[in-house]
Amino acid sequence: MELKSIFFTAIKALWVNKARSILTMLGVIIGVGSVVLLTSIGTGLQLYIQQQFADLGANTLFVVPGNPFSEDGGFPNPEEAFIESSKGRLKRRHMEKILRDHRDIISDGAVTSFSSGEAKYRNETKKVTLLGVTANYEIVNNTKPSSGKWFTESDEDRSRRVVMMGSNITEELFGDIDPVNKQIKLEGQNYRIAGVLETKGGFGGPNYDNYIYLPFNTLTDDFNSELIDNFSFKIKDENLIDEATKQIKKTLLGENLKEDEFSVFDQTQLLETINSILGMLTLGLGAIAAISLVVGGIGIMNIMLVSVTERTREIGLRKALGATPKVILIQFLFEAALLSVVGGMIGVGIAYAGSIFIQQWFPAQVTMEAVVLAFGVSTVVGLVFGAAPARRASKLSPIEALRYE
Image (cartoon, rainbow, N blue to C red):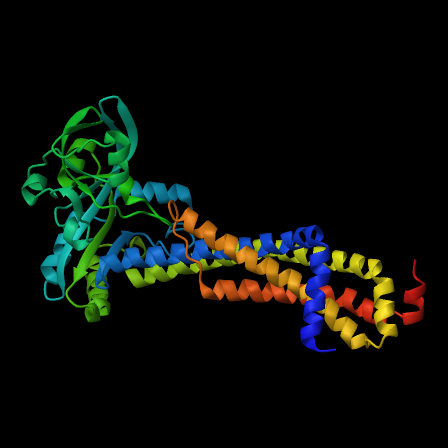
């Protein structure tokens, strides 16, 4: 019997029991759909973060307190971390000295400090994170206003009460109102809104669209906050990253800072760390979702065993007419594979539609690798779990099968 005839016979057998076939495929549909959708979210998130770092440019260096790449963040325990952070190990003078000493390789640098407060406009009130940044933060970190203008060095030198608004907090407080040059209250004090920043997002990390940006000196004076979150430096040439890292460390160590009190890293190192975490998370989620594929495979095996029992007389008749055990085996394997393959195709389609839908709120991207992997696994599941019923069918004795009631 030709494979083509076996294939169409298998389709006919499944079509006769459409409802049962669809219910059998549900496990595979859910399993494949879950695997593809979850991996698409993980992949989309990685690509999104890579794009965010690419926007900064390849020649940006960061200096932060402690060691963010260690398990304890550079401190033995959280209590000590809090005590040490409150002392403020990094100072603005450190950044200024680095710029003075290394203008040959560093073009610019910015300081970021932080605090928290309550923002109010009319009847809307929100708890917000406040970032105190130097005027050149816009250039160093490629942060552009969508409306208005970034505050000036004069605003910073004179500790003027001006702010730049993140896009999310702007929408929450002002809705459709243009906030530029309007007044907002921070902890009861009036501040003029100089501009609104372009949307940057923050999947996998802090969402900068929720922040309000003040001149560094304004934050220091009004909120009594001198805790430095980080320095960011623009290196003149990305080929000088290693040399700049070495010189920055040398300067800070010369300022009586210890090696474990600060870290210097470029975005590649940070990106590799984030991608490693996201990769493990995606793998874990995919593995959990794959359990449903096993459940689907067990469902296929159960239904195929039932099918063999129901069609015992048919199998006996076909054997009596000359069908070999190999032909019977291949037909039932085809039926099991068809259930898993069609279920896999439907699952991929549902996952693709789902990824498009959730892109409104979360980055997701279905990759060909995820589709091929899920599709291949579903096919293997069908063949593996269909093997036992197919073998049972092929081993039936024609005489006993014809006598079966």
